[in-house]
Amino acid sequence: MTDIPLASVERLMRKAGADRVSVDGAKELRDTLEEIGRGISERAAKFAKHAGRKTVKAEDVKLAK
Image 1 (cartoon, rainbow, N blue to C red):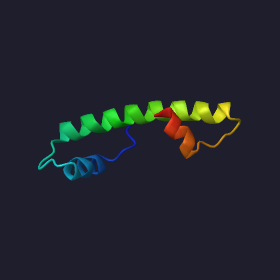
Image 2: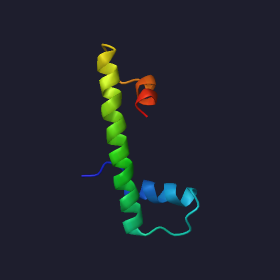
Image 3: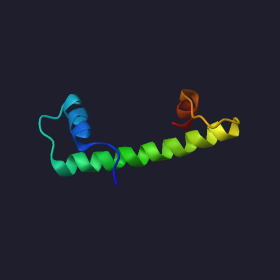
Image 4: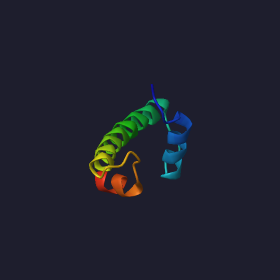
């Protein structure tokens, strides 16, 4: 299951300069963004736990990038 709506990805691609966006192109970018986001989220959660917190803060995400 995907968490990022396809319409949001298409809008992002158009804002980046694409005149037209294929469904396959938008799906591929969505899958890639979710994979990257999942990795960053996992690392950020580890940083928060290491700091003794349950809450992931912006600083954790910045470190995880």
